[in-house]
Image 1: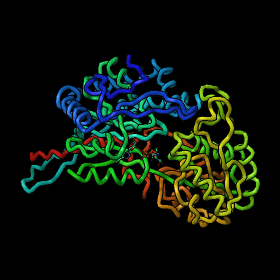
Image 2: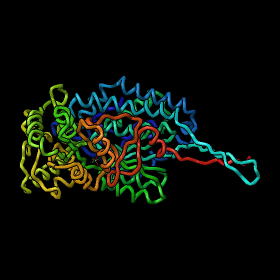
Image 3: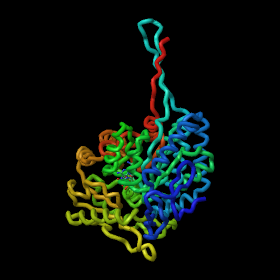
Image 4: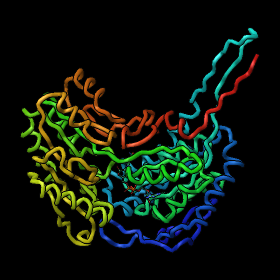
Length: 488
Ligand code: NAD
């Protein structure tokens, strides 16, 4: 078993040290050092890509689907067998509360292997009978081949879950991967290497290189000419940089990017459902979920009541030991990120927002006061053009705006460069369908939030992404479709 105080790369089934130095992995709940992480240089990234290529050309790419699928289900079982180790590592890296990590991050992180392994077995092909001048006709059919070596670049907000969301379908389709986890959260990706070895995934199928973005492992991996496709989750500006790198060699990209998601609450909504749901959609994971609601539009007759009820609940959010089941919110991921979120708190204040709760840093007590905690914050009274209403904050905050009719709510919800998700709260289902159809996002929730059926397409419109992952949609990216035309 590796020593998780010193996080190494995982290349060709071995833990490998070295590169261009190291960096610190800090526990955001306490500000203390979790581990030292080796930072890959171009040479190590090259070794990882070469081992992925070799594995693709030998066992993995040619293995029967049923056999590959069985191995991937064993990976899921392997993660679940070591559930507590993954849980501890994820909580130490992110500071997220145990209630969240044990219900979402680790179980979903494991399930991503099973779901895609099972779905691939039932994924159909297509065939066409074609008329030809000879009268005998031709038969066309499609076959799918692995795309090749996939570069997987991941964020820090749901580290294992968002990484396996890509690695699961990529491996199911017969690709091999080189993963670059976020520099903030390297540990579960490293731990997964042990599980891969334990269950007998061939060497070189799953590789991990650690590092940062520019001038580091992220850039080296995305620029590597032997990477056949890049799947990325993270900020829109980073996505733009990666697309430029992918342009060399015309490599395809799948991009899951930022959001500035709107929730719309109609006057006939079930108030309790809308409040409970909005508490989660705004504040879950300390506001660090790409799908979080940062703008709420509430129909005027219930506006005051809604703001007051949401504020009461937000004031009750508890901080403290992430391993305690009593803790409601963890910290932000880093000091840099907290400074960024606080700059939006200041901008909202300067723009004259009415601050109903929060706006600062809470006293958590003991060791935790050295962590990156922040208060849940609710504003009203800002203009739609104000910075805190326009830009993605990625923190536990929301601006609530009243509206008078459906068209106005839809127009405000759509007035953003992003198009990731929305949550609509109404008991009038005709209205729900009508509004869901008009909000320009990849996923619309009605009377719920973050309810995910993994067979459905997931992704963003506009600046929130390119392509869809999830279910068989993921297979579109992780395979190349070939046409075979047989003249009869
Ligand atoms: P980020 O873009 O800062 O970093 C993501 C990853 O990209 C990290 O591994 C980083 O090291 C790497 N990276 C940075 N610059 C790079 C470069 N030039 N070349 C190659 N790699 C580079 O994002 P983050 O701060 O880790 O995550 C938060 C962002 O992710 C938010 O914007 C959020 O909305 C978004 N996100 C989107 C989804 C989605 O599904 N749409 C899901 C989760 C998070």
